[in-house]
Figure 1: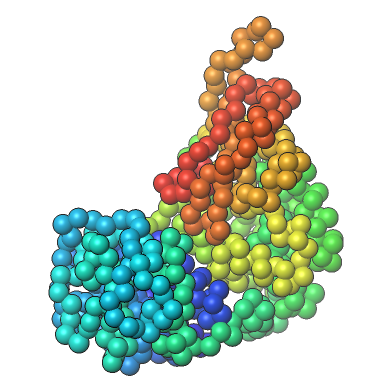
Figure 2: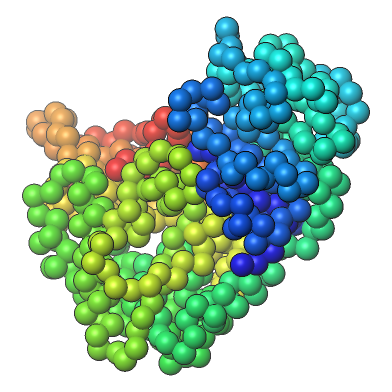
Length: 512
């Protein structure tokens, strides 16, 4: 087990991985593990410090989440955030109660005492609160180092034992100097050095792949998207040519001309690619299916069936490599801690139990923007790295209701027009992701003095950094107007275009 300078114990906050992100951006390698991680496994990672994340529970509730009690005796610096603060307060003899007024949103942090945690932090800086419980009494040996208007104990510390606790979320974008606070904890309190970057990450992952795979073969599932392309490039660096079998499955759920683009892309990379036409097989399996979760699981299982059949044509294929990201993991299953399942991703929650492949998923601890940096580190061209995210289940989850050839045709053509207009206007690289959704809802229209009763397409464009949160993109109206006009005029069967102005949360980026 490798050395991890900072270890984050996850108590279920949707923001937990952002703690690791912020520290990795500061050059300090950080990993997230479940709150229930054993003391033995924690010690095996030889951390220099531990961070306790936020979470949705109350520390005084029955069945509340608690870490291995041994962590308190390791003599390591500890930082508690929100729920983590309340755990520290409770453990050291303080008192936590339900707050009379829940505190959500921006607050001003007033620094009350000098502390290494607040080194270089300006007084009255903006922090982000999100809690329903609060510390009523702080433990003996702790002092108040920060307050806010509604939190007399916004930050407390026992400098002698190097235990720190903050009620606000330092990891989120809205806490203006949150990254600096986390950096203070890691570098100046824990003594970590800034030696980690995407180059070192690539070297670590190549070594891990070589150790895991040995002299056996890996089948790499390729979609043509950024994630699977980066995985293929990483495997190409790590393994001899004869040990890597890259397989591209045309499942009939791709965007317009995408199959050809994928093949051209891999030819450019000089990575051999096997293309399998499984369009008929996938569409037959999806016939009559309208439930989003069933779609995802059917697609996940079909992919494995196709990969399994291809693997049987080669000797000693023991592994399946996928471009699974951390956002896929936390939305699909509670792998790291007690976070809630949002939806199954075909390459996480959608995999069948009978699958015999061992998984190789080198990207499952990083976010999309980090994957792009890794791709550039591996020498992938910028036009490939800059492609918008595309879901593994493809257009199936952008058709509301049953997936069939008619629906896919309308969706492909509308998406192609939208992409053309975005590129022509220079807005393609200004938004995180853009796509169209076929609603399968008909409405009345008028074309050439005739009544129509045709389908509706929704245009979805969002701005994001990592896909964990997103806001709808404020695209100029003339661009949206051109997209709408062209879709309605050029595609028979669509007479209405709407723009999705919901953000994540409460909505997800994809509609299904």
